Image (cartoon, rainbow over all chains, first blue to last red; front, side, top):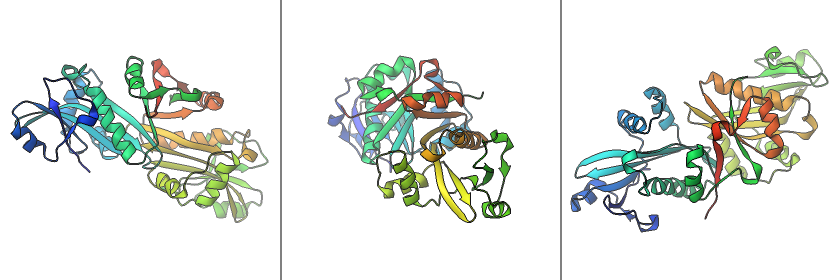
Length: 173
Length: 173
């Protein structure tokens, strides 16, 4: 269920997502124009070392690649974000969601490479995730936000503690 | 991956979960003793009308059974709670969890029939869910709690907003 989207030359400000260009074949799109481009993909065939490098760049604790692989396999949705220069692709963002395929989804592991932050790319990545989940008829899209990104998600239309509903984490007694 | 546990005569106070009796065959267990017993199961072959009746009893909005079936199929874990009188079983509790099978799980649709509430059965049900998730090496067990059940989950070892992490829900702009 992969899809690719050509977004914009990386030197430009990102357009509103509705202005995104659809590209079935990113290499063709990149071939037409020499400037670097940003693409999204829902393919799960991600180089785990490249993903680890991305997560290292934002300071996340390392996790066993075997478990990361399993988590990707069993996620309902994976959306990755790539910068493409000619035939070279670089992983610059990632997100995934678990789901019951019917009512609820929970978004995990949202990451954008520091060099690509503050350009609207995190927002564009999340809009892809939301759009895809909505297209799959998921009505309840949830996540757990660290304090420093609560406003980022609020700007995307997420509400914290709606009607007093609390996110809770289990810890051993 | 079904498992059954014989808990106790329904007229008794529930024992601590570590005192639960294991029963591979609940009908055999029930045959041995005439008093009603409580069992847990992870089988997914649940009568959807019986589940709907249980959810009706606690006042939940009805959901399309086709979607409920899909959600159960795609949940990582389903734990149901049954009262058994002789050969008759009655569904008295339910819970399920989505997961990436590696790091995270999120518990949804926790319900105990009103006639069986305030007897420690909700706690016993949740302990089964937690135990099963822990046995599958899931380290991050999460849920979204309505205000009136936050204390119930806190007593089970769940923390709300740990380190300022906020549960968030997406709503269209």
